[in-house]
Image (cartoon, rainbow, N blue to C red; front, side, top):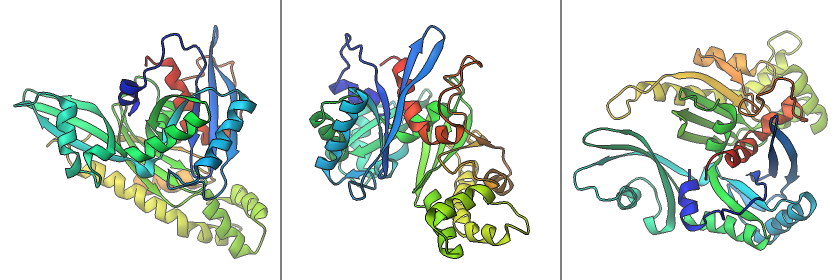
Length: 359
């Protein structure tokens, strides 16, 4: 999403041959991935992470343009990053479904623009939007619309331009993650839980389209801090304890389980709420397709006992993501990145996979 709209104004030159990196930007870090087409399939190229100082980006808004430009300029110089596909912050994106009747309809985009202010708290002139057609019948179209404040996109464009890095496309983080963890051409419905360092994202993807997103201020570092406080240990020691015991229910781990449960239950409740809502509310008068399974990614998604805890709560299959599902077409090829670490690169990988689609 946003990719088609972006290219209306910034088309990619046909002669552009510079490889494009997937660049996943959060408040805390930038993760980048390069994927390379070889005679033996797609292979992992350069990849890495840069920490972003606190206050540079807040809730997806760039607050310190100069600092951000310094970070991007160092990426260009040190890692030879010249062209990128960038994720847009979920916190700033609005998603909604819209029905447009064909009677009197001249242009879908113009009609969406006239309806925007009924669904989002910003004016049409201050928004950038894109849409996907979910279904069509004799009377009209059912659409999925995504919109973001124009000044957010302009802020990102500005720092990349001043850093002399070409932006190939902007895309929803959720859409990029879905491209990485759901097999290409799979049109089933899935819930994705991205359990990151500072936040957790809950996404529902159906027919390859992101239908819903939600972001919670619950992440892996919060769990570590709770362990640190309760057991009076260093942050590093608490991190080791979290990885060793997780949510195991046993005598040795009884106190740890209770400490973590306070925060994990908040995420569990949100997952269950959206899971139930999806299955009990109709789409255009029709039942929604059932969620086939819940896919988990992010740095703490494989915390011991977490998937079992969610499985019991949702009575659904929980799966830890395979971020290489659309890359590793040769079982002999193993990307040079640890499995745990790969789970944090889902969005960057999905963005980089956009290089192998037609712009």
